[in-house]
Image (spheres, helix red, strand yellow):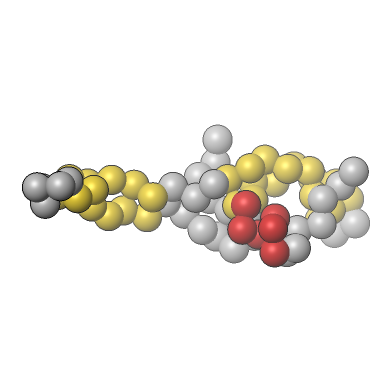
Length: 63
């Protein structure tokens, strides 16, 4: 599955997982990407979209 939103361009970000003893290890913050049918240039197309773009109405879903 694609790891990038086709609308906003959101990609995975890296950071640290910090334990109770404050030992840090690398981790990945991956966006919640969904494959949806959306209207692009008047025709339905399957695209990868993050849930924030879906919720905010930046994507018009094809029914």
